[in-house]
Image 1 (spheres, one colour):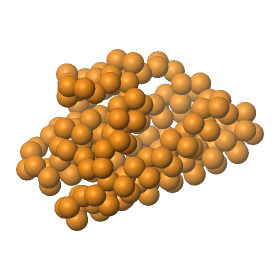
Image 2 (tube, one colour):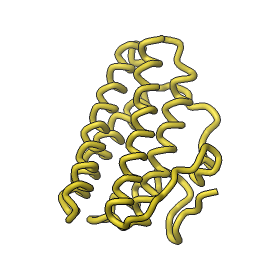
Image 3 (tube, helix red, strand yellow):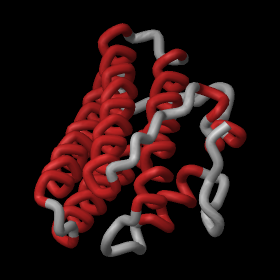
Image 4 (cartoon, rainbow, N blue to C red):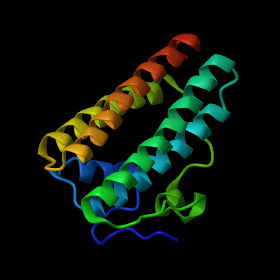
Length: 165
């Protein structure tokens, strides 16, 4: 089981809120961020599982797959910053999964929160990139950020496809 560094909340959303207060990310911060991105994959998968509309479900599943991709980029950033080989935990070995809901019902309110959360994620990644001294790591942050905005755009499309619930 992966463990969270001291001082981090056990809730993924609260942990991300804490990370957003940082100008520059440490290696421990990046490990937490990788776990949050893995949690995001699971969150989108569980949301998609309850959506019957095939195109909407596929968009949500794609967001989830890209969240895992973000986690892999964060692992690369860890390696670039520290030389450390960090491995992503599987499923229940992610400490954020303890508080994960077993199902995520779709709602207009949730879609609004996701749209804003993805935009906030882009802003956070861009800010971290601006303060990162390693250009290759900064590029990884910027790429993750741009994809966060695309996730929000996909959620907007899901909302449209589902008739805004």
